[in-house]
Image 1 (cartoon, each protein chain N blue to C red):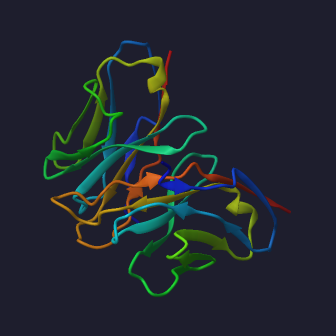
Image 2: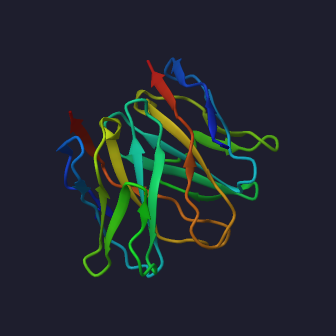
Length: 119
Length: 115
């Protein structure tokens, strides 16, 4: 079964508008973290934002915010005021175990959403 | 700003040859990872390394793969006898010590092409 599901293979957004990238996850572990990474065409993976399963507030980092709905097991990324440089692949990822016996737990990635920002 | 560096950025190798992918993690980090991404697909976990030993590995990480931290700075992934299906982008990542959240910082990747 998919642990991380990103249902939007591709999205278009007009420059300066907001866009929401969907992510749902599946875990029975009460302690987990959710991450979003950006992968531009150059290939590197850039960390954007993190949400912990026990965090009461939704995470925000500049123009990025994470709409965390724990009961629905969703962790959507919201990008406000899109810029041309936001065009990239976006990956949602989950880490189920923060710390156990020397392991911080590996990241499980979704298939990604390709965001294209139109001028 | 400290970063994870990987070399080479692109490697082409003949099927059956051994390759070593190199990574220099961020200096105060203790947890090291290798991930791979086949072209157009999602990023997949290969292995994590802590305290000079493998702490987790996926089913992809079979006997043809090995990792090593030969000195205090480098972290390497060796593929003993490459196959065509090993062609992918390989990412090294590292994270800081801590029992709560720490994000993994990724290198820029090594694109491996097996011909």
